[in-house]
Length: 266
Image (cartoon, rainbow, N blue to C red; front, side, top):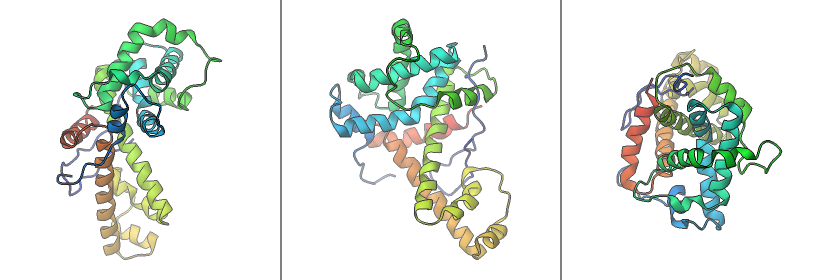
């Protein structure tokens, strides 16, 4: 589970706790680059281009577990949740369902959750008729691990919709941490990232700056600078990921504030 340690940035994130199972029986002034979601919106019902399909696939890979857990929270069995999630993404990627997206709403998570709710309500029988042995899923989804994760989530009285937003926030942050890990490792600083990650994610550090300096054979001052830079890069990547899920630059800061709020919910 990802948390955050307070760092010098705007907006300041809270420290989220482990997200719970829903309903028991779960920068300003910068140029706004073309984003994945804006690419998808521009494609509309025609997702034939490689760029639009890649953009939609990348977005979906971040969101599939929150959607699966949402279905489980609404009372669907693990098997039905798996079948519905597979069928939903197959339709989303293959049947041009994005044509129903409302650019005025602009947020990918809102589009996905609304689409899933309609899909589950209106097409449950057809979606679950293709049991295992049917067509290959459009995305490679690790349902066994997802179900284990879902079962370990503590019970809460949150609505499935509230828990979906929290899982979305956690999934997005975990994606950022994974990107940062890969980036540091590629640059030959994998050991540094492993040692300093607790100072980034709000985990209880098992060592002081001085201990980290000894372990990495650098000065304590170097550790402080490295942590500062790590947090700054983390903030930049979070903003970048958020920007990919909205359709205009005006929504980035608002969505960032909502991200921290959703991640901090109990």
